[in-house]
Image (cartoon, helix red, strand yellow):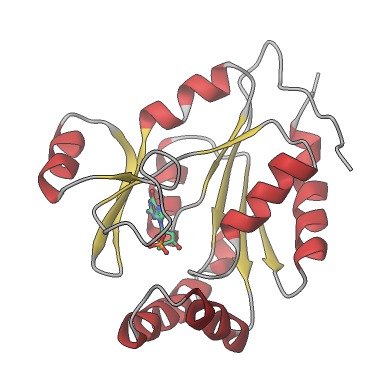
Length: 197
Ligand code: 5GP
């Protein structure tokens, strides 16, 4: 059921960070919040140098850049943050954030722990969440996704352990074992950031 939350008026929309390992369900949970719960949220579309997976679409899932285009954007000051994750470059483009916030929309950055640290150092983050799941659940989801080679999956799981060690840097840790429970926990946490006087 939609909770019919209106975009902020008069003040910029809130800035949120959602981190967590590959396969934990960040994209699915955000889709539920926006489409089913009616949150006025924009998920920032990151830039990356990694190749598109099958089914991924340029400008919807990522801005897929060549290494040299990524460097040019970096040199031009176009990134709010950028990091190397699993051997590829990822970054948040400033143009994905400020325009939406001015219109009163909340903006969510689904980024890794290194990126989250850079953003906190530069700007005020309203609420940051680390999403986690039991390792066996993650392994199963990554295998099921069947888009990455086994050694890439192991690299992602090893990285998940390193990232989890920094979960204490976040406002809240949410476990995604049950999707609807995780969505309602996140909705309850973020709802008060909209339509504040
Ligand atoms: P994937 O290749 O599975 O789409 O993403 C791998 C990881 O890269 C994600 O789990 C996420 O934490 C991280 N990531 C995605 N976009 C960005 C970004 O713009 N900045 C940073 N720092 N990390 C990102």
